[in-house]
Length: 471
Ligand code: FAD
Ligand code: NAI
Image: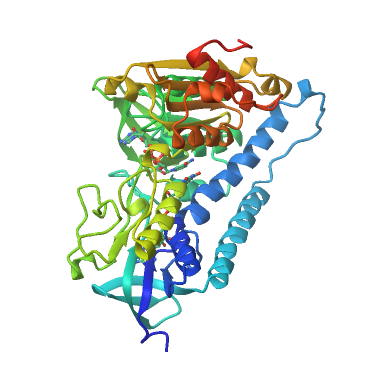
């Protein structure tokens, strides 16, 4: 019976963008179905992205700390051994708990969950190839495309997810490789490179550009991050391009050369992680059947209300514009439903935080110093090192700094950049400050509990318009 009935909304893709939109639609009383082909909800983020990578980052950090950072804390540890199988199980438990949680939320909010692959057969009609066999046709007044992204392949290196891997292979290796070369020193390269380096692999990161961290990271913070990661044992080859690889021998041989041409060398590796970015995924969606096209980067083109040129078909998340981040996808999921239901919605793209979950973490929001400089706005910078923060000191975890960039005339905060312990939690305060148009003096005059890491944020703000007390 449900087949014949037209829905208010059908969503293709049950990743963060799609499942959040589905729950919100259910809450708003829309008759909604969500089509997902993976077999589980949560998309890249919950299944093979944010969640499994953070489980491994947390536990590999604990292992590394127990090996190298206990004696001076007064803890003598005996025989420490890695049980990689159990570490992977702990990761899988986190993933399955969370993906099942979304299924529960679907039931709670009356979202129909259709397991299968959806493709357009008309502007209001989607044919689903059901995972358990057979087909189902779904019609809807509104449709949201939320089909996400996939790893960008490296030409000439065939991904087998065992020796030549993407992040999906990197969260599931069954033994610690002796050596790993990471192509691309962006967020995935540095997070997964950190995991395997901590577990014992010799990790070399090859990055085309002159700085690590990918687009967006402040150059000063990127330098600091590289320095600490190098101290942890990761080797970097910046301004270097990979020419090609040979996988026929026991070791993979990668030919690299200076990006500007010249010096060539060959790197040996047991495993090569390809982490040169992600690209929108719209394969098999039947876009040609309804005349929807993608731009030169594979993104579906939309207006400011997420509408394609067919106005009842909207697009959110990784398969369209903007940063490929789960919390950005989530905001769009909510806003898209508000547009459908109420005619207005809101996402502030100037206040979307980024976090790299290495140790220490790196987090930022707003503009970096390069961008502010290029914009021509007069600005001032306040910094505060965690080495002068009492909580970081007591925790024996005081590497890093907070850097705040404010408009020289209005004192309004333009960017917050943190490298340090719990930077990913601390950045929430910076995001709130930017969202509400705070000045650095607003922050500097706000009481922060002592002793906490957040005092470093307050003192960096004080340093922006005056002087910090403790440095
Ligand atoms: P996706 O999560 O990719 O979901 C799209 C879903 O659509 C998929 O499940 C797919 O199976 C389904 N689908 C596609 N086509 C069809 C079809 N035709 N029919 C039915 N279903 C279909 N972001 C963060 O903010 N923080 C992090 O810490 C973080 N860590 C990451 C770590 C890794 C290793 C990776 C790879 C990514 C990470 N990201 C992180 C990015 C984050 O995962 C993405 O931004 C987020 O998943 C995007 O959500 P989405 O819903 O747009 O797409
Ligand atoms: P990225 O865009 O962050 O970094 C890719 C890096 O590879 C860049 O530094 C780029 O200069 C470099 N590069 C590109 N081509 C190259 C080549 N041929 N040789 C050498 N280097 C090359 O992309 P990444 O790390 O693959 O991650 C993809 C996306 O996934 C991120 O942009 C982010 O949106 C998301 N993600 C977010 C995480 C988080 O929020 N913590 C964690 C992991 C992924």
